[in-house]
Amino acid sequence: MITLTKLNDKQFSLNALFIEQVESFPDTTITLTNGKKFVVKETETEVQLKVIEFYQKINVLGLRKSLEG
Image (tube, rainbow, N blue to C red; front, side, top):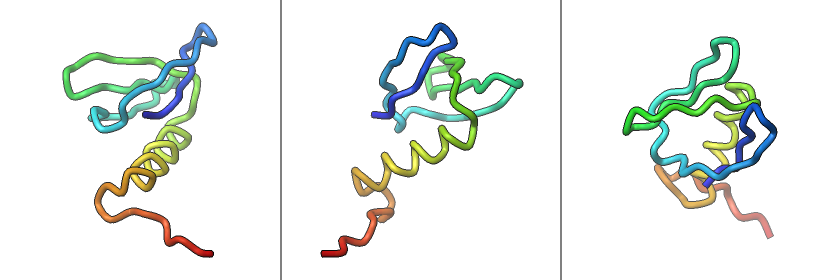
């Protein structure tokens, strides 16, 4: 799950696995695989970074960060 902020400043969690598309209109609009849309305060780049971090955390597509000890 990634935490995002709606335009009314309320935060919510979104399962990043269901994100199909992220666009800027100029507001960032996220479209899910079921067609539902969310408009958020975060930039498109911020959303992309959160998704990558989430994928690394759950080890999707072998994107796990190397563990340095």
